[in-house]
Image 1 (spheres, helix red, strand yellow):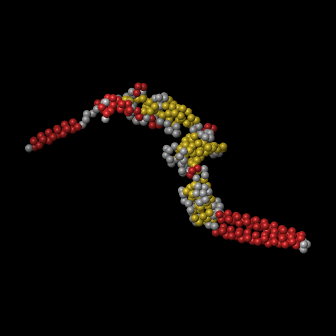
Image 2 (cartoon, rainbow, N blue to C red):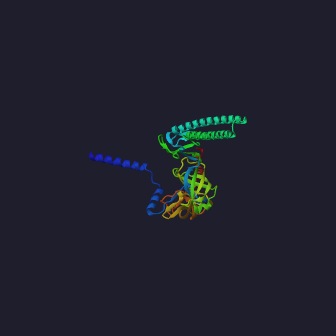
Image 3 (cartoon, helix red, strand yellow):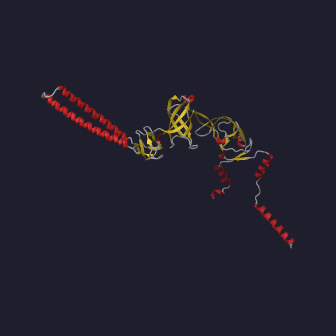
Length: 393
């Protein structure tokens, strides 16, 4: 009984092995050849698609001095207290938009209101004294015409009238100043913008000159950069500027040189250059920015960074050899990097029209055999010719 059971199991195992061998496809000869080539240390033949290569060609390389600085609004206002008073209310917070004339801060006007009432009373008293002195002068003129008063009395009355008139003018000036002081207890937005920095809260004591808050116009951003003094001779108004802003990743911004400061900084020996923004503008001020002024443009061979391989101090690229049958390791002389595209200038090692791998990997070898795949359109056309029935499907 045991012998029969073992015999049945052996037969079942043999049938399962046969079925498995029938289901598994045979390995292609190319895979076997590649495996043998790897064992022997020979370069493996590589299939290269048209999209895997690029043609080296000349492009415009813009070069110029480096510019560093920050993004700042052209229209900004530091609103400060013009009277000494206690802060009653702050109506806007950081980041809130404001319109011109909107009330931002209210200060206590109690003591200033008392000064205004005193000035108004002084104006009324001065007006009354002026009216009385005018009537007295008119009476003395009548009496003088009839010879009933002296010329000295008339002169004295005229002096008193002039003095009263001066007092009226002085009182009205004090009244205007008092009204102006009362108006200064209400701080308003000078233009449309955004509150960028709130400095006080309700209950704070605002002395004269104390900063209350800042308002900026986010639509008036500009790049306030600095250029080394030894490079300033190449900078001209109207030149294009390409730069990146800290906080915006790899996004590229552009601008135009608007103004060059006529004096260098005494400490850093750098010259300030104002750049007007073009295209998309950042909405946050104070961010650090760094870029390059396109002072000169030349036509040079350019290769994207993805096609370059760096090994220590050497840089090379994988070039398609003559006839398109093998790879050639081309040692390169690299120049400046184009800030706009990220491509590098190739000074030596490649020529215009050479084909290089767009994104090589680390397993490639010099002299490795390759097969250039036909373009997809050509491959489809060849397939349709070889199989006419496929066209009707």
